[in-house]
Amino acid sequence: MERAKRSLWCIVPVLLITLGASGPCQGTFFEVDEILEALKNEIQTAQSMEAGVPRLEIDKVELWLSVFSEKSDKESVELKIVGTEEVNLYQPNPAISHHTIHLSFNPDYFTDFTSEMSSGLVEAISEAKASLKKTYLTPPNMTLNSVTFTIKFGVMRKKTGVIHFVTTDLQRFAAGAIPTHTLNIHMSIKNQ
Image (cartoon, rainbow, N blue to C red; front, side, top):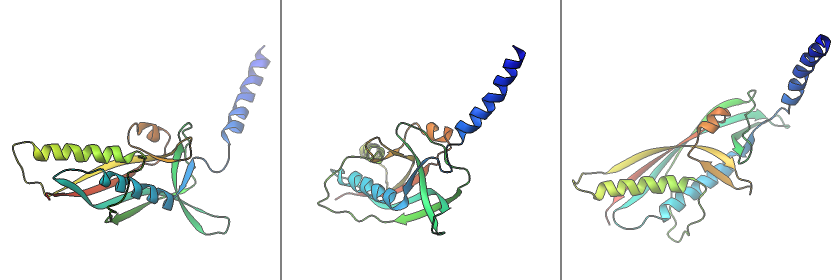
């Protein structure tokens, strides 16, 4: 009986090591340009939903993306954004180098832009704009020229393959060591 217990204790670590070594690359990797394209669509959609007076115009957007670099098969450096799948929460490979990209841009809006389905940020932006507008219009009056607010988010690929920006329950991302990103939105009030 004692020999059987010792044999079992020898097998368990071997099984854990074997099952834990699932491959050199874990997590869901996104191309930087596909994330930027999805973010541009979110900002455009949020702005196109703005109605009434005063208007809160998004003047400038600052974005801090956590990216990882690794060498490709052709020995060039590739930058990837690590996210997760809707179903499984993957932990990124610790051997990959971590960097931050800071982007600052002024969005150009298309007046004939039709609202698309949100990928997760439109709700957060719209809710902030609605709260600011209500505060601005509720007495006592105050002078409010510009506003900046920050959204922290993670990136997830839905079962359908669509990119989704997660703004709630970010502790799931922290527990899985999946990086989050920061979006600063600078707005001004237009009274015409």
